[in-house]
View 1 (spheres, one colour):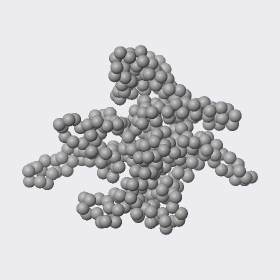
View 2 (cartoon, rainbow, N blue to C red):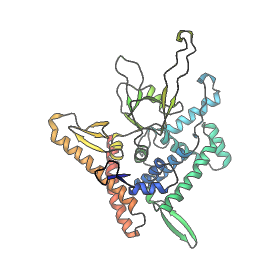
View 3 (cartoon, rainbow, N blue to C red):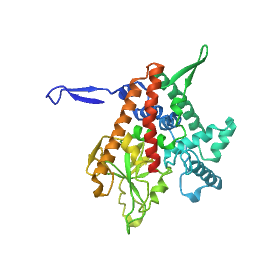
Length: 374
């Protein structure tokens, strides 16, 4: 929403939807989900964005969670959880994925959906879900939602239609899926859609308590929810490491219950905050798809909260400013790509082709920056 004062009266204000806000208001879905889809179209990774949007729109997770301690699980349940963890580790965005490694619950959802979709029959799907601790009915619901979202995007003009035969229409998904295997660009969709739901990883200090914690902008110390693939990663965080920032979908506050041990004397535990759908992301993804940027000395500040040092070498002051200006210039170019894309949904094929070529050049620079950081 653009905000503009019309006169000196504080109560007299004018509100105007931005072009992106206009399209989001016409999509019958949560605004965060809609933004993930639109950015997915622009970056060429719509397939992954559709899966993420569908997962966020389902009433429950596609991942089964076996409650209670591990000692209570059966051997079959343990085997299913191990098979699922292996699938996530070696699937989309996994350890050796050609499109980059991204550690995230929503990226894991893309990996398992793709593997489920490859099953050749309903019976095979059920067997696959049973052996990987997955919910077949939720994955079917996600599949249906993906198709509905595709139709909505086509109606809004974000996806072109091709007439292969008289009387039949098919969607041209080539342009929207040129980077469908790129996990790094897909993670940018998460930042663009879920921002400002950002947290930082607080690593343990030397000699202090072990394990890490997640800190939100509001100053809340949180943990990933119990079935998150990132829970163990946060618990085992070392003093030094690459992971520093994550996006999440929502916060859940659990009110503390009275402790039952004799020593506690019925003292109520403090409330705990858990984050759902935690996904670690690149600092460049935050700089390019997050909030407002400004340069302060040798750092770029995002929304007066997140601080990214461009360089720690004070002797290279000019180079620091040059690097910061280049990042801000790329961010401005990327914002123009998004704006032009949402404004020109009904332009001529020739104009759209020229526009897409310009957009590709900017997105290639973004992709190079993300890969070099990795």
